[in-house]
Length: 467
Ligand code: ASP
Ligand code: MG
Image 1 (tube, rainbow, N blue to C red):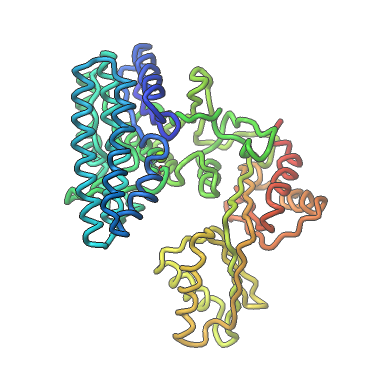
Image 2: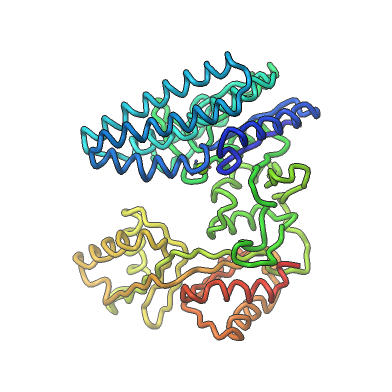
C-alpha cells in the first residue's frame, strides 16, 4: 500500500510521544506497507507560542525576552530529541540541526525587533519553525530505529504556493513538483518526513497553508502521488457526531462523505483543515481519521458516496465566538448593489463570512463572522458609507453562536428543517438567523451564546445522532 500519514498536535507533544509515533510508523511499514510518506506538524502548542508570544515580543522590540524565548524553544526540542532518539550519533546530528534552526529563528526575531515591523511574510517565516524543528526529530527517531527516513521542508517536498502568506494556495504544476521530489525517495525505500503546514513560493520564500494546515499537506501529497489512502492520526476516535466535551453521548461516525466532512470542517469542527478534502475528491482517495490511542481501530473513513442511512442529519458543530452584523441598506439602492459593496469591503479587509442571510422587504443583510474579526468588519462597513448612501444603519451583536447541522440525508428528506426548529422550539430557544446551503447538506442557524449547547444537545437527541 502507498500511504500518507499525518501526525499532529498532541501526537507529537514530547519525546515520549514522538517515540511512540515512530514505533507505530515502523510497525505499519514492517507490516508490508512499502511506500510511506509521513507528515508532521509542530510539537504541541509550539505554533501558538510562536504566533502569540514570539511575534509579540519581537514587534514590541523586547530583544531580551526574544532570546529567553528562543532558549526555551531550543530546550524543549532538545529534550524531546533526547527522549526519542536512542542512537547517540543521530541524536548529536539532530541537536545540531535544532541549534542551527533556532539560531536562524533568533536572528529573524531580533531583526523584527530592531525594525519594529512585522509583515505577513516574516510572520509565516517565524511560525514555520514549529514544523521545521519537529520534522528533524521525528526523522531522527525513525532513523535510530533503522528506517531510512529523511526530513523535508514543504518546499523540498514540492509544496509550491502563491504568495498568499498565512493562507497560501498551491500553484499549478505543484503536483508534478511533489511527484518529482517524493516518488524517487519511495523507490529507494526511504521514508520522507515532511513538514506539514508550510510551503514555499517559486522564489523559495516560506509560506503557510492556514491553521491546522498539516492535514492539507498530507492530502496534497496523497493526491499528487496517487496514494492508496491518507491516514490522519489524532488523539480522538475519529470524526464525532458532536464535540464529546459538550455532548456526552457523541459517538464516532464510521463513514462520512467528502462533502459532509467538508461542511463539518468549514463549520468549525476542528477535526480537519477546511481545505483538506478538496485535493483527493476527484481521485477518490480515501482519508481515514485514526485514533492514536487505538491504532487498530478503523477510525472514520471519508469517501466519495454519501452513505444510505436512516439518519438524515449526522453531526452537529458549534462555532462559539461569532458576531452577527445586521445591515440595513438604503432604500435608494438595490439589495444586490448593497450586498456587492458590503462583501467587497469585507473581502478587502480579509474578513471571512461564516453565514449570510438576507430579507428583501426590509432590505437587511445579516452576516455572521468570527468574533475576532468584528472590529475589522465594522471599520470596513463604516468606510462604505463615506462613499455614498448605501447603508442606512447597522448593528452588531457578539453574544451569539452559530450551530451547523450536517448530513447528506438531509437532501431530499422532507421535514428535516422542521424537526431541527421544533427541537429548538421545545427548548424555548429562539433563533436569530437561519441559512441552508443549496447543497442541502447543512442547515445552520444562530442563537444566543448561552443557548448554543442546549440547542446542540436537543438536535443531537432529536436525530438520535449518538445512537
Ligand atoms: N502547526 C500548525 C497549526 O498549529 C499546523 C497543524 O497543526 O496542522 O496550525
Ligand atoms: Mg499544530
